[in-house]
Length: 93
Image (cartoon, rainbow, N blue to C red):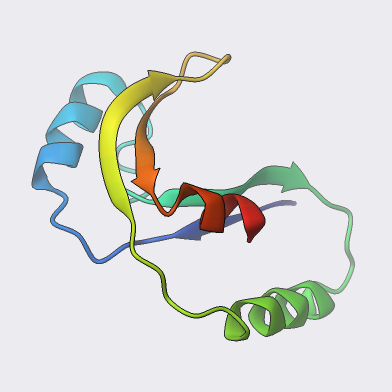
């Protein structure tokens, strides 16, 4: 099984979805999001300890502002919006 950690920010997604419809084959699989941990394969038999750990880490964090601006391309040819504000917090998290 694969696991990932994503955040769905409370933003208006119309413009983002228009762009995604043109370039993102996964547009109908997942809503606009911020990927905190990219998908990793795991052989966990019991996922509850992982869920508990993530919940405990996230409970300790206070909300922080983000500002999305500009596009970048990943080494595997994905386009993504860049975080102009909030990037260091996401990296630390």
